[in-house]
Amino acid sequence: MSISNYKPESKSNSEVRSLSAADDSATVAAPSTIDNLPAQNTATPDQLSFAHDAVLLQEAVAAVLGVKSLPENSLQASGIYVDATFGRGGHSRLLLTQLAADAQLIVFDKDPTAITVARELAAEDKRVHVIHDSFASLTESLAALGISQVDGLMADLGVSSPQIDDGSRGFSFMRDGAVDMRMDTTRGQSVAEWLEKVDDETLANVLYDFGEERHSRRIARAIKEMSRYTSTLELAEVIKVAHPKWQKGKHPATQSFQAMRIFINNELGDVDSFLEQSIPIIKAGGQLAVISFHSLEDRRIKQFLQRHSKGQYPEDEKLPMPPNRPRYFSKPKRIGPSKSEVAGNPRSRSAWLRTATRTDVVYQSEQSSESMQS
Ligand SMILES: C[S@@+](CC[C@H](N)C(=O)[O-])C[C@H]1O[C@@H](n2cnc3c(N)ncnc32)[C@H](O)[C@@H]1O
Figure (cartoon, rainbow, N blue to C red):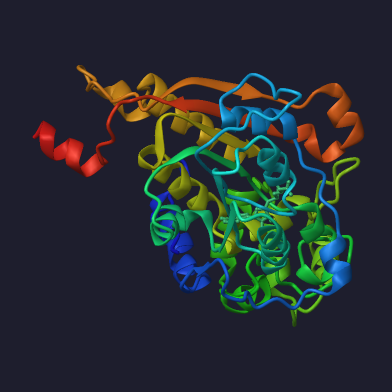
């Protein structure tokens, strides 16, 4: 896993370079853990019991099955489906109720605790196969199961409530814990390890690029003046003191914590890679359904679908004769939560589900289509 192919939008080369330099050390590739191999899990029963309210549940499951709404009786859909972000399995469990006995559901998660829960489900339901890895390993991990194409692919991006609620994971600025923030605690470096090494400028760029934090330089300097990075509450307090403009109802560390989390988990690089791999992986007539929670992610999904369903490539606008681009997806749609869902689960208020149907246009990699044109 590497974020070397990730480029922040409209940033200077020096910013891109400083990010890439830090990224090289941010992630250490490890072989994916498939199905019955043990995940290194240190979760206690209490941690396992943290609940997650699945967002846009009915809508996402209907979308991945290619139906407008779910019938009262099971659809009994055959085929192969992927839930790329198992979490506590809210979407997977509903999807399973709609699948036939011969269907398969492949679930991914980076998080060892989520994987423990997924394995419990797999032990009860033989249709479920579990992959402990990033969804950026989609093609490779499915190939290891002998699968080259699927009928439906869904992802519910970001962190789960159990990850935030467990202070020891380091995602929360409201609960004390180690400054970790890794989704996969079995590999890669923690935010604390990264903060020890990173320079002020790179840190400021990360806070700006991934948290849209306008006071990134001042906050980065204050963070780098800290003598240790052992407590999320201490880190949040330093950011709070350094932040010159507090917004009502929002902790001043919100954006900085989001930025460090996105960076250390290579979240945007993984999403880009996942979306690109979805083109050859989804069968003609199959479905893509992705839920995102912030504009950095939603914009990428929107632009991906604009390129591959409408042929709208920003770089083509400067060309006198834009090339005829393949349309790999049709019917892109955006669905938001209902008022009642937002009332019942405030976390859903910023969620968008984007869906599309794979066309029958045969996939050509960018490289092979370039060599055909020249
Ligand atoms: C919002 S939660 C999903 C919740 C799930 N849909 C449910 O109903 O319980 C996101 C999950 O995706 C996982 N995740 C985030 N990025 C990932 C990635 N690149 N690869 C695999 N899993 C990832 C997180 O560890 C987390 O468990």
